[in-house]
Image 1 (cartoon, rainbow, N blue to C red):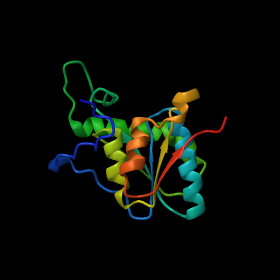
Image 2: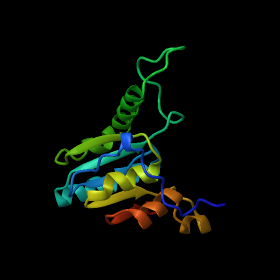
Image 3: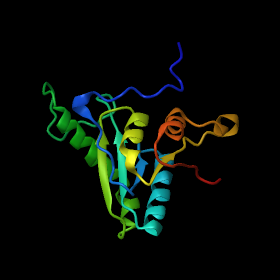
Image 4: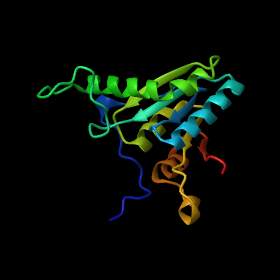
Length: 165
C-alpha cells in the first residue's frame, strides 16, 4: 500500500509542535542549496512585509548531529540532541540571516518529519516557504514529497522557492 499523498501522522500529545506566531513567515531549512534559496526568498519577503521569520529544521536521531557533550558510551537526551540541531541550524543560516538585520528571526528544531513539522509550525503563519530539490527535466516538473504535502495540507499560503537557471 502506498503512503504517498497521505496526511502526515499526528504528533503524540506529549510532543506537540508549537505554532509560529501569527503573521510570521515560516521557512524549512535542511542544509541543502534549495533550502538556502528558500531562506533567502523568505528573508527578502519578511524584510519587505515587516514580518518575523521562523526557520524550522526537522530532525530524527539518525539525522541529528552529536550533542557537544556526547562521548562514546553516553546516551544523550532528546533536549541535548534538539539543542545540537538548533545550534547547527543557526550556524548553517548565519550568513543569510546576517544580511537582513531588520528581520526578527527565531530558530526551531522539531523532532518530527519535515512535512509534519512545517505544516504544524505554519498553521498560524502568514506564509510557509519551502525549497525545491532542483531536479531537472521531467522530474523537475514534479514537486518533492515534502513540498507537495505542504502545498496540499498547510493552512497558510505556501511558496515553493525554485532558483532560476
